[in-house]
Amino acid sequence: MLVARYTLRAHRAAFLLGAGEEADDVVQEAFVKAFRHLSEFRADEAFGPWLLRIVVNETKNLARSRRRRAVLPGERRMSLEQARHRVSFPILVPAALGPPPDVVASDGGRVVSLIYPRTRYGPLRMDEFAGHPDQIYFEKIVHTGDVTPVTVNGTKGLWIKGPHELVYLTPDGSSAVAPPRLTTGNTLLWGTPRVALRLEGDVGQAAALAIADSAR
Image (cartoon, rainbow, N blue to C red; front, side):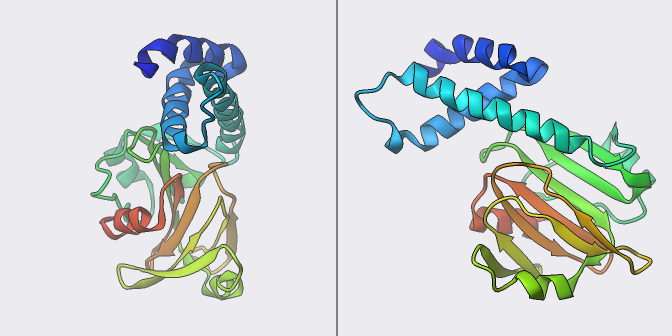
C-alpha cells in the first residue's frame, strides 16, 4: 500500500535531484531503509516527508558513489567471461549472490569489481585486486574500535563497521591502497595468495561472512 502510494513521488524527487536513470535504484533502496527503520518513525509524523528525506540522503550517497566510481583508471564494463580473460588472477564469484549483474575491470586488468545493485541487503559490491592483503596493515588496525578479526575460508579477514580502504601488496611486492567505493554500509576484507578481496554494503557480519565463504 505504502509502496504504491509513494513510489511515483519518490521517483520524481530522486530524478529531479540528479539520480537520472538510477532513480529506480535510489527509490528501492529508500523503501528498504524506510521499512528497516520503521521503529524510528514517529506516529505523529507523515510518512511521505520522512520517506523523501531518505530519498534525498540516498541521492546524495549516489552522487558520492559516482565520484568514487570514477577513481579507478581504465574502467570497462564487460561480461564475467570477458573479465576472466582480461584480468591476471582468478575471479571469485560468491555463490550466495549468484552471477553478478555488472562486472567492471580496471587498472589494466589488475582490478575487477562484481556489482550487485539489488540484493536482499541492498546494493553490494565485491572488489578483487591482483595481489594479497597486507598482513602488517591488518595487524595495525585489528585492535581499533570498529574492527573485528574474522576467518574466511580458513584465512584471516577483518570485519569493519563502516566504509574502509583496503591496503594490499601487488604481485611485484609494492603496496597499494584501494579507497572505499561505497559511502555507506560495512566492509569485509580478506584474501587468498593471489587475490585481495573487499565486500562492501549494508550487510551484517554473519551474512557478509556467508557471502565471502561461498566465493569460488
